[in-house]
Image: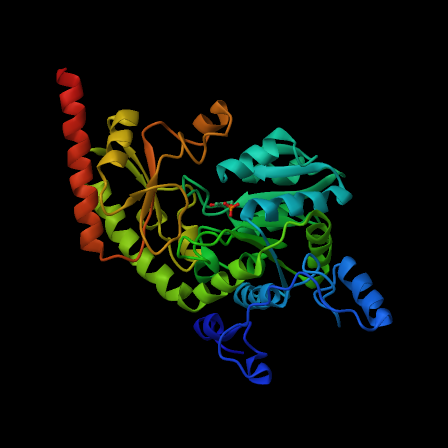
Length: 398
Ligand SMILES: *Cc1c(COP(=O)(O)O)cnc(C)c1O
């Protein structure tokens, strides 16, 4: 069994020697010839039942070999039997909720989590009733119709950490989904900690270059079948070109995450010492909920930082206008650094009370640190902090 860095480069490429290729072939077929009807019918039955592959792929909504390769690679990296890829992280979560409904309509959720995930759960659109709880309430809140427990660690945007082992124990027989998007399998492998499902917005670090929207769920083969059934029935597919790009990003995943994380530690320390900054939320500073878990269940604190400006919303808005190298934009996990305003953008759709309860304030910004040179990043942030302070001083004088 090879180590993680080797798997990141080679997994999902096992059939290359037989194919006689050195890069993943991109199969764009929507349909496949069915010369032998008996084989076709058996293949159709297998795929509709959620099998990973069949003698004939039949139709691209049921199976695609380019997508299957990156699924195999990600299953290896997460240490699971299977992985099911979707057209986005939200499509993955939706498929999960639809599959869970057959077990019952009640889902326990720990806040905070990605704004649109919160919204999808809170609004009931997927036909489930979400109950938002603290991690230590899970055991007491489980009911006969509880189909799933959902946590996100590190959480978006506050970087709160949740103890995956403790939640898995509290959930007992109820499956636990961990959104591990912020950690990547480089820093955290929830399945090995007792989680049932590991979800990634592969749009973020896994893709890593800001050019792919994708979502994946890694789990056992048994658990993967209902997810594939939902995917085939609802059409929440990952396009093979997106699958190719996702696969292309994986060999550098470890390098990217390690470099971005090293940058983030330096930037977090300097932000914490800056007079315009009231608070920095970063596991590597010990300034988030359950920061100790960054060492016990993670291999490091990651590359996301949240911070609050002393002068609140106006300073946050001024800083977003003033950055030059860092891009003011939502999303995260790209090779380039991105900064955004959770309350006004990614977490806009979260109920006001819930936002305040999680500490998502008007003065908070979330920085996704890239792999640029750290001194160039700090120079840009420092000038933007100065520019923001100057803009506020002018406003106050006027
Ligand atoms: C972005 C994100 C999602 C949603 O993923 P999409 O690919 O944008 O649909 C889910 N969870 C987390 C933690 C995210 O950051």
